[in-house]
Image (cartoon, rainbow, N blue to C red):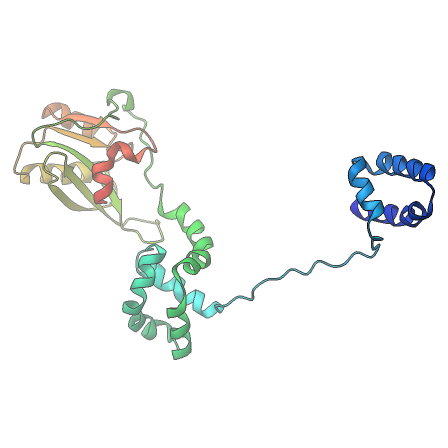
Length: 271
């Protein structure tokens, strides 16, 4: 029985119940419990209470009108994108520094600037939520897993226990902005576990030969011998050229588990 039908049924028997005798009240109560499916105690409260209204009152939803206008949200998204997608608290702190740039590029009025500076960090998260969802699919997860020779490269998931330099983690960082079409610049980062020494080389594209060439240049400039490297499962690292190079120069080559960034935590915090 629907709520409306139940309300109408209760209204139809409520007056009859209040004027009936004791035995008749018992029969009406039994009938109501059987039809409505209510507990006897609850049914007694309904029948002995005030007469119900059969008219359904519309539910008034109290909501707050949007406080920030659409031009302000568009300006916020533009600044957030140009600043490199910082999180809301940092974006709030960066806004005054970015206003001169936004004033020239977006032609902001004084009223829009004041409104932009009034947005709180939590409100920024709410306004940017759908944009973050759209960009997350394009910005992250660009590391395509390599399958060739993966079973020849051992997994390393435990903590690095080294007492000398030379054992490193490496990763490739994309600099494509919000569009990953075509060739663009990457940073090959190498971090030593024992000394936290960091080396970075710029690489155009993700070709295996270019990555290997950049690693050779880093190896020749390190103040210590390169003894081991640990990488993710990207095809720029998991390939025959890299494996052959490590075997020829007695470099220990390990990899982390797919989609487990904590396995390469030392290099991830540098990225």
